[in-house]
Image (cartoon, rainbow, N blue to C red):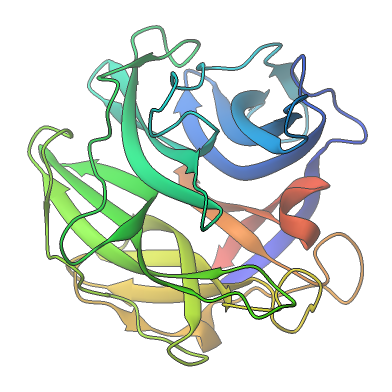
Length: 320
């Protein structure tokens, strides 16, 4: 794989965020709508009582060649969940997929905890107006913790092929104890599930499908998959479980794997064809990728330094 970087295409220092949101444009996720590309992303407001960030979903529309921004949503696409719900304190990421004439969006809902910072689950929202508005399928999640996946289920990415839904997602393995310098750290891996209706899922409980590269404490996040020439290609991001926020050597990098069936994967980071830049907005980190086809081209959206603090960029596949 060989990629040509197109630089930062959505810069929050130049482009307005929705009303009430003040920072970040994380986890860009694209969907093709008519003759333009809509990119959903997670942005943040500040809770006036707790002074903690809360993630919301917005979008930006681009023209065919990503040179012009056509529209930025003025409000959030979907409201957060109610009191005590799985998505009460944020939604991030938000992964859309066409299902006939509707768009199914798989959400990662965040809810705060006391002993640890957060718990997550996967929800479903459906749009019947080409992605302008969404309604929850139900107030609860479609995929959540279970016997062998005890926590932190989320980051779900779905492909709909031949009347079958294929999902790649993450599940939590454990939380590590606080060490006096850092709070408890979470550890999570990538897994696979399938469904005939996009609602009821069959998964191979606790089966990690992507091998570790930097040891068993590798955190794997946000899988994204495209099918090219009858082979599935996955990009994801990975990092060390601790000391990753300020140490650039332990922060997120992009990983790559390929598969002939979408279930059994061969990790091949050495052929991913893209890495951090020598300087600039993506010099210390690459995270939250989204790979997709648009016409006869294949693109990769991703965040850079500080988890999307500056916006998101684009790369174009020029050789596979």
